[in-house]
Amino acid sequence: MKSLFNAGKFLALDMASTIFFLVLFVLTKNIPLSIGLGMALGVGQIAWQFAQKKRPDTMQWLSLFLVVTTGTASLLLHDPRFVMAKPSIIYAIVGIVMLKPGWMNRYLPAQAMELVPDIAVVFGYIWSALMFASAALNLVLVLRLDPITWAAAMSAWGIGSKLGLFLVQYATMRFIGVRRHRAMTAAVPAAA
Image (cartoon, rainbow, N blue to C red):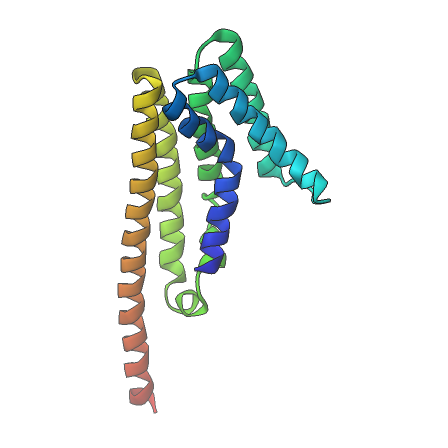
């Protein structure tokens, strides 16, 4: 579980400039200010990494590139949809990474790896599908909603869909794991 929270922390840091943009925009209704400060946060995160003598990883560079390019396009064209589309790009990239069989294994406890590794692979693909669906939904909402309604809708979807899938996955893996464990322990005395 600790690994899962660490992964979530890194993803939140990678998405910090977008989240900051959303919160600031909802509070101020000022698109240029929100975009500018979101871009500044992205640049600041990379600068902080260098100040700490740490090398920024690929996702941090990608996030900075997306923040700067979508932010610049939004400012130059006076259209916030470029910044609003950034989560679709991130979701699609994460979805592609999640297509690798077994990516979830490093987040599972040893007992789960023993009892339900096959179920974890299936849920890895389900998570990938959720990322692609979220990317598509975001693009549809970017084209149909105003920025404030979009921010509320995508925030609710982002939290609700991931929490819902996490709970379904946890309950399913636990149920199957308990059944398999009982079957294994029942088979051991019969074999002896």
